[in-house]
Amino acid sequence: MHGHVFDFSAETQAPANDSCKLILDNILFNDLLIEHIYWYCRFRWIVIGVLLFFGIFSFVDDLFNYLNMRHDLYWPFAIAGVAIVINILFKWHGNRLRLSGPGSSLILNMWTQILLDLIILTIVVHFVGSLDTVISFAYLFHTVLSCIFFSRPQSLLVITFSSMLFISCVALELTGIVPPSSIYSNTSYIHRVVPDLQTVVIQISMILSIWFVVWYLVSYISNLVRERDYELCTTNQRLKDAQEEKTKHLLRLTHELKAPFAAIDANIQLIQKGHCGVLPFKALELLERIAARSRKLGDVIQAMLQLENVQKMTSEILQTESLDLAEIIKWCIAQLHPTAEKQGVKIEANLHSVQINANEDCMKMLFSNVISNAILYSHHNSQVTVDCRSRPNAGPMACVEDHGIGILPDKIDKIFEEYYRTDEAVSHNKNSNGLGLAIVKHVAQIHKLSIHVASEPNVGTRFEILFPNSL
Amino acid sequence: MSYIMIVDDDDDFSFATATVLEEAGHEVRVESNIPGAEASLKSKQPDLVILDAMFPESSSAGFELARKIRQSDDPIKHVPILMLTAVNSKFPLGFCDKDIDDAYMPVEDFLEKPVDFDILKNRVNTLLKNRSSCILK
Image (tube, rainbow over the protein chains, first blue to last red):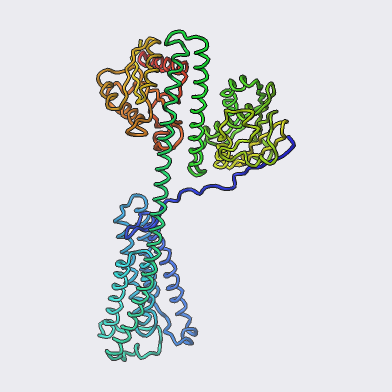
C-alpha cells in the first residue's frame, strides 16, 4: 500500500504502581529490616578489613616509628576476630529470619547488632585513645545511621547509650581500673599522667555537645525527609484509592447502562421468535429496528468498558501466554463473518502459524477491531485481505488490508484518538463509535507492538501490526 | 425435564429467560437476590444454576455465591453454574483477581449479556447433558 503513512509505536508506557516501602512512623517493614540487617553486616566487613589492615601495618616497625605510633599491636586482630564471629552469626540469623522470621525477631537482631557494635567500638576507642585521639567521633557513624533508619526517640537512645559507654570508658581509665591506652607511643596519657578532672569534664562535655548537635541536626533533617516520604506515600495511596473508586463507579455505571439493553434485547427476542404469538410483518420490521438500535447502544457501552479496561492495564500486570497468532485471527474472522456477509465483503486470509506471547483477550480485541474496521469501511463487493507470518530477525507481523474509502492524509495521525471519526467514515458507516482504534492503541502499548498504517483515499488502507522480537 | 434456577436481579431479563427455558420444557425458578437463592438451593437442588455476576449489594455477589456453592458439603457443590453478566467478566475492572482467575472461577460456563437465546439454550442443554453423564458415571 502506497500513499500516506502513519506509524504508531508504543513508546510511552504508564509506570507501574510502585509498592510503598517507606518507614511509617516507627514501623519498619520486614523486608526493609532485613535489608538493614544485611547492610550492617556488609558495613561491618569493611570495619573488620580496616582493623586487620591497621593491625598488619603495626608490624611494619619503621612506618609506625616514623608516625610516632605504637607497633606490634594485637588488639586489632582480637577485635576483628570477635567481629567476624558476630558478623557470621548475625548474617546466619538474618537468613533464617528472612525465610520465616517474625518482625519482632528482626528488630531484636538489629538492636543487638547496634549494641554489640557500640561495645566493640568502645573497646576500639579505649585502645586507640579515648581522649588522646579524635576516635570518639566514630560513635557519630552509628548516630547518623540511627537517625536515618529509626525515629528520633530511638536515635536518641543510640546516642545516649554511646555517651554512657564513652563516659564509662574514660571513667574506667581515669580511675585506673582499666589501664589507659593509645596508639601514640609517646603521650602523657599512656604514661599515666592523668589530666585533672575539670579538664576531662570539659573535654567530654565538648565531645558530647558536638555529638548531640550532630544528632539534633541529622535527626531533624531525617524527620523532615521521613515526613515528606510519608506525605508522598499517603498522597499516592489516596490517588490509587480515587482511581479504584473511579473504575468501580465506571463498572457499576456500565452495568446499569448495559443491563437494560440486555433486558430489552431479551424481550425483543421473545417477540421475534414467536413466544408471544404471531406479529404482522410491519411490526416485526419495527421491532428489528428497535433491536438494532438497542444493540448499537449496548456495543458503545461495551467499547467504553473495553477502553477503560485496557487503559487500566500495564505491561507489568498483563497476564500473557503463548498463543498462535493465526488461531487468534481465525477466531476474529469467524466472529466477523456475519458482518462481512452483510457488507458484501469477502475476507481473504493467508495465515501462517506463528507463536506470540500475549494476552488472548487483548489480541482478540485488537484484531476484531482492526478487521471490523476494514470490513465496515470497504466498498461493497470488495475484498479484505488478512495475513500473518514470521519475519527474519524480527518479531511476527500481521497485515489487514482493505479496498475501501481510505483516510485523508491530514487525518491519518488522528485515527487512534478516542471518539475521533472522519467525516468520510461517518457518511460511509453511521454505526461506528470511534473507540475501536483507541482500544487498539492501548492494547498495542501494553504489548509493546508497533502499528504501521498506510492509506490512500478511495483506494484502501493497510494496517501492519508488528510484534517485537522477544514476543 | 430439568429444574433450572435463575438468580438475577433484573426481573425483565429473568422473565424473558424463564419464558424461553420453560417453553423448552424445563421447570424454572427465578430468584432476584442472593439470600432468596440460598434459601431456594437448600429447599430443592436444581440441575443447573444460571447466575448473574453483579447484584446491587455487591459487584461480585454472583462469584461469591458460586464459591459458596462449590465449598458446601452438600451434593449441591456439583451443580453446574452458567454465569451471565452485562460486563465482560474476564477483565479486572472492579472484580477482584480471584473473580477473573480462570483456574479459580467456580463456574462451568460464561455468557455475556445481551444473550442470544438460541446460544443460551444450546449452552444449557450441553451443561445438563454433561451433568447427566457425570451422574451416570
